[in-house]
Amino acid sequence: MTNLEINSKQLFSEIKKLIEESRSVVAQTINSTLTATYWNIGKKINDEILQNERAEYGKQIVASLSRQLSMEFGKGWSEKQLRHCLYFVETFPEFEIVSTLWRQLSWSHFKEIIYLKTELEREFYSQMCRIENWSVRTLRKKIDSMLFERTAISKKPEELIKLELKQLKEKNKLTPDLVFRDPYVLDFLNLKDTYLEKDLESAIIHELEKFILELGVGFTFVARQKRMIIDEKDFYLDLLFYHRKLKRLVAIDLKIGEFKAEYKGKMELYLRWLEKFDTEPDEKQPVGIILCTEGNREQIELLQLDKTNIKVAEFITKVLPRKLLAEKLHFAVEMAKNQLDKNSNI
Image (tube, rainbow, N blue to C red; front, side, top):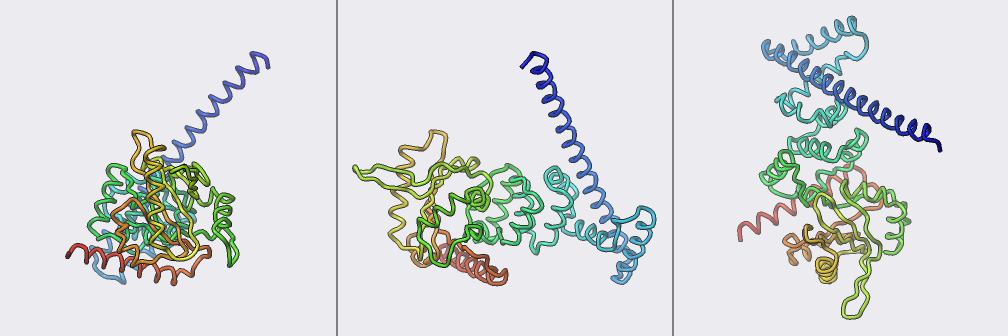
């Protein structure tokens, strides 16, 4: 390759980078301007409706505005769009909050978030979307799979949830309870009705990218069948990951069937070995996840695993109907909160 070709290639790369960066800035500017416009439109309409204090007037003014704006600017100003703007202001009444999110969240993101039922859900998905840079498609998938209800944080008292979300918002502090979930949805593995632990492990390795997506952003694959020599005997951990933001090794043990109390001792052995031989000075203690087909909640409670670095989580290999998944998760949340209440009264 001649000097001319080398210089030309380098110059092309530099100019390409400049164009891509400028496009990104332009896209961000357009998005923030659009989002601000929609919020301000919603605010104007909301103020007008509140001044009149009649619900029927609200319907009439939205319909009238839609007709006038459509005649002036064409498509994009339907009654439905104006109601999105109204609901946007109702769910995000403070402009300052919106302005801190619009660099990462588009108007399409906001439209998904504003219709969530509770403030906690909206705050959770807004901040996780910001931190993990989700696309709109990913956000929809996370909401549909009830990610908030599946995270450990949803099982805490409301005040503690608010505190952790506040730390995430103000300090970008990601805690294990925001990262780990129960159950994990592994429908992409395409497993048959009957399978062995080695089949599950092989399917995960084959679909590693999708498995990491379900685990969450920040996970990096380290090893499969991690070998540990203890008392001159070989022990093998199914899967080992590392989480960059938590700065921890994450050990995963796969189990078919119900959780058994003896699984705890084996995972403790793995974690102590990893802490002694594989953990860097600036890293935190490793965390273990025991993935089971079914959890035995009473055994988990008696073992007080909530006070350790060991998490027990169920996994499902087929997508449950949303109603059934909701019932299952709401039951788990209630059980966890009842247990917290019992512990606080002891």
